[in-house]
Amino acid sequence: MPDRLGSPLTLQAAGRPAPAGQDGVPQIPTVGEPTASALDHAKLQATLDAAHEAGMYGLNSAVQDGGTAWRGASGVADTASGRPVRTDMRQRVGGITETFVATAVLQQVDQGRVHLDDPIGGYLPDVVPGPRGREITVRMLLGHTSGIGDYLSAAFPSLSDPSAESLDAYRNRRLSPRRLVEWGLGAKPTGDPGQNWSHSGTDYVILGLLLEKITGERAADYITASVIRRAGLRDTYFPGDDVGIHGPHPKMYESLFGALDQPRDYSDYNMSWSSTEGSLISTPGDLNHFYRDLLTGRLTSRNSLAEMRKTVPVKDANGQTVLDYGLGIYALNLPCGRFWGHDGSVWGAATQSLTGQDGGRQLTVAMNRTGFQRLDGQGVPITGPIDNALGAHVLQALCGPSDASSATSAATTRFLPLTFVTPPF
Image (cartoon, rainbow, N blue to C red):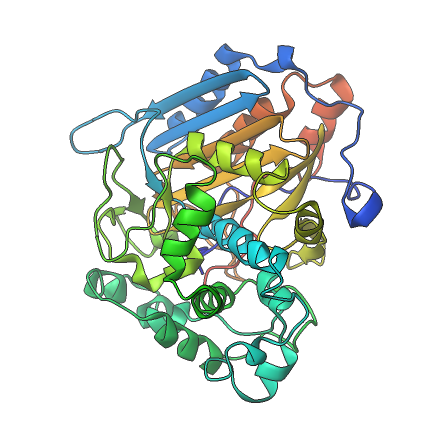
């Protein structure tokens, strides 16, 4: 699933979701919101350095608060040479691609060419045939409530061992979107259509095929013209069959949750396996720009943005709500308010981007080591020092100095980074 997938960055905060306003759009609590004076450059750099010192090889972070910006980097882009991470480095951003795809689909909704509650089989009868094509709607695909299984285990069968054998064997393999969809439809369903939330990369590969059917263009070309260029992004692109990354970038190291004795470099990879679900390349600065434009209504209509913000709960193995997932975007409650965004993880690269509802306070942080945690008996990553240090950086970036009660709450509740998607093995 790019998110593999799943990311070590997703934060869980204690407390109830923020109350909903008109059109079901949640409102940010006013108590404890950060102000411009909370952008402490020294503390931002210190918390970023702490994540590197805890074991993350390299990090690149961008924080925005209205007209005030901070860019920071820590650690190495290459463990062999010691080449340092730079603030302008590009990286594979995995599941963050979903928000770009969702934005493109909602643009088609604005034009009346797609309807959210229409069955996908009406648009793509040969892709999703039969009862599922009649029952699964466009909205369900966008919100991961389709019940369609993920294709990842079929694409990389050695993950069930677990081992990296298939990851290494298929570095240069090209997969078509239809092949990915066939694998996903052949996987065990995660539930009935509309029943519950379950992340599936297959959903967003189908949405890419929907864009191609409706626009008559390759999905990557349409998203590039109508979302990436419209937002004025300079360092964001789909790599196609190019296994490398253009421009400055770090190497990307995967540990596969202990299945690899030494982290392995997966910087060069044919990303057709993640298609319109997770193949995008970007930078923290570009992602802040994108989410600010999206959440302030510059990329879709107000009605479509309200639809994107209608959420369903995402729960952990204990039944506790971790976050609220909308249409290609999720909401996360922090001590200082409610933030919207997404995270993404592919082999060796993880990224999270969060933005306040008004588009003011923002953070995007990218790192070049994944799968560094160990798994518990249920296959869920165990939170460790790197996760805790990352959580501290996210809190510093988005909330700034906290009052004593907020600090106590963060320390004594389950306010820690955790993976909300269990690894596929």
